[in-house]
Amino acid sequence: MKIVRKVLAYIYRDNQGVCEVLVFNHEDHYGQEINPQVPSGTLRKNESPESAILREVFEEAGLEFKKHQNYLGTFDFKREEIDEIHRRDVFEFETDGLKESWVHHVSSDDEDDGMIFHYYWLPARVAKEKLVAEMGNYLPVIDGEI
Image: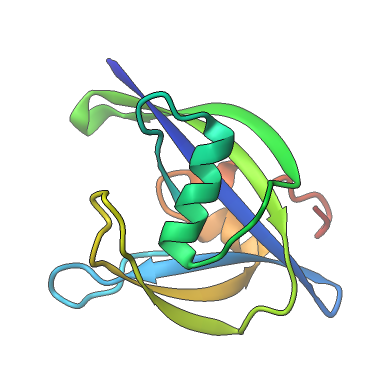
């Protein structure tokens, strides 16, 4: 299997004692919304995971961070249907002051260019169960805390 290097971001906020994760749905070619996911993407040639995650968060959410708060590790996700292993470097960010929801039009040199992402917050426990493609597997949720 081919190994593809990826990055994935968990962006958290505290909402009255409930830890929430920033997620988005995107519209497919028919205007249907796809299940929630978090900002993520593929490393470019000679790009570090630390640089890639900052770029992806900016491109996919319009959010600019100077650095990540925490590195959770590297995890493999098998994409049997396309004979690939996505080797994901997972990072955490904390924020406050963001809107409850917003729409972001992606502008990048990547495959997401032109897509429309609908951002909103989910409690971390809910996100752990609902995120697509095993994206919730790395959320370190224990007794409602992160």
